[in-house]
Image (tube, rainbow over all chains, first blue to last red; front, side, top):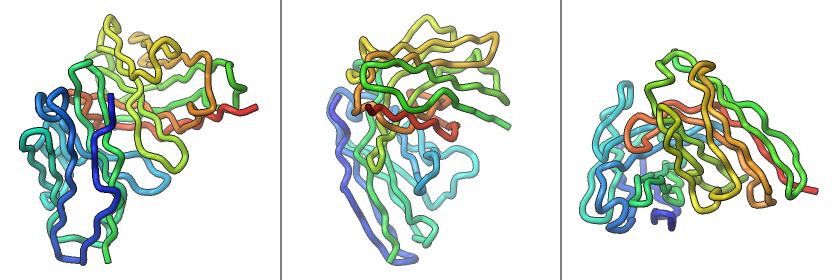
Length: 110
Length: 118
């Protein structure tokens, strides 16, 4: 149950697009279409952005999109806004029938 | 409106026990998996445990296996996490969450802080 690998930090300017990667193995990200992404502000509970690799829950901006290729999932935020500055986490179902999170990525909007 | 409200956190000595509760409302509780996730101070999210809708299937992270027990009472719309043999590294905010699909959690509680210290 090793954590999924995410970059510790990414940054971008308002209006730009950024992509956060999430690398797992053939026992989690690579095998199951159960990858989710979360946004978390300091002191707050996480909020679901993406589920089942590509799907957005109601109310989540279309500026958030996601994909998967092999053992790596990706979250793209387009048209960056200052309010997007937060921590982002990926999560995957695993062959052990458990879940595993990535280490988290801090997004800075310059 | 979906609401999840955790309780039961607090300060406990190493080796001690705590029972966390999460009271749910606003959805058909008995139809959904429930999940516990924790976050140590200044650290990332860690998946802890999950329980099936009926309660007959439970799953645990390696860090929780053998020490934590998840359960639920569908008549009271409540999920529990019994934590025994607590260690300093179990210090964290514990969140309960409703599973949407494959451990994608669409609703989260506000969290309850567990501090393991002498």
